[in-house]
Length: 483
Image (cartoon, rainbow, N blue to C red):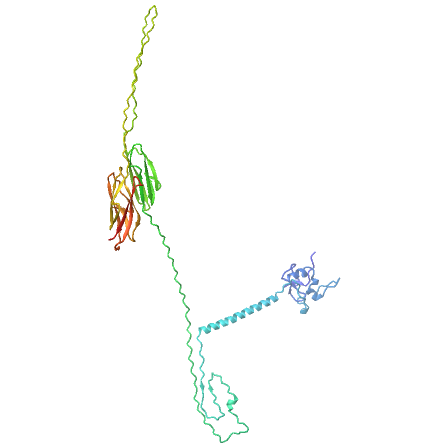
């Protein structure tokens, strides 16, 4: 069953009709024509069947009585308004936005006024700063000399632009005579003194202030950081040592090859990659040359060779004894057929003696002794240089060579030193392979800068290692002094 609707509920443009749900289109025609009703009140009073307890309804009909049937007043377009004092306060929960609108308008007005005032003072400060000040008009004071009595006073004439100064009454009238002493008629009237016109000094107009130009910001130059140079380490020179335990052997013997290489990129022994330090045992049957190929850090290739001489010795033969055997004789029995049997004679065997062979020993060849020995002339040097010549001689029983290096060098600044063999110079070098009794010249060459002072000394030691036996080495100390 639908709840009864308030008879005073109508639409804004049509009082006789209303919406069956709470809407802002519904209006109340009980007290004030077309009064807006909060949605909460519409749900409770107007559409919820409780319109008899609605404050607006009771303003017209009064509070309901027990068992009283209230007749609905006819709707009119403009009903009689009740006094405002009789309108009750809206129910709790209704929203009244009038106070909020009033406060919002006041705040907007305050902000507008503050903005106008701030804009006025800002414009005034801008105008006073941009325009030069107007100097005030000078005040001219003119004083006219007149003949006056003692009671007279000099009144200055002021320009129209100046404000006149009020003169006290006592000064205008002068000293007043007392009642007991009347003025003497014979008193001498003083002569008026001519006062020159006083012209005030003309004020010097202030110079028009010139606005200082704004400072020009000078940007600090950006410091460019220089990249730190990367130092590339200079690789050292290659050092090669290639030797054999023997350079001359007999067929069937073996030899050990050793090598020691530093500052190298690759090392190959007979085209086989090997480590920088190593050894290998070889048993050649014929004369064989072994090659050590070294590629240094500068991609330069250096080859060292060693030739192993294989001597053909007479092989040792074990003699085989020859034995001649004589067969035993065969006995032929003779049988005589007689009536009486005759004993058969026992044959006598002939024994041939055994022949013992005689062995002749074959002499075993004696191998040549293996001796490594070198000599250096001179074995030390001290002089002016710059070239120091040293003669190396091979006193070994086999062919050999010497590997040359410099050690413990003490050179002044700007000096250099190299080892030269057959016009080939470097920090390390080697003599050619020399047969027994052969010799080779080695030059230790110093590089002396121009203008070197007298008495300057340079020291170094030339170390020569045998290729056939690396443990054998010669050390030649060298001292160079500029005379």
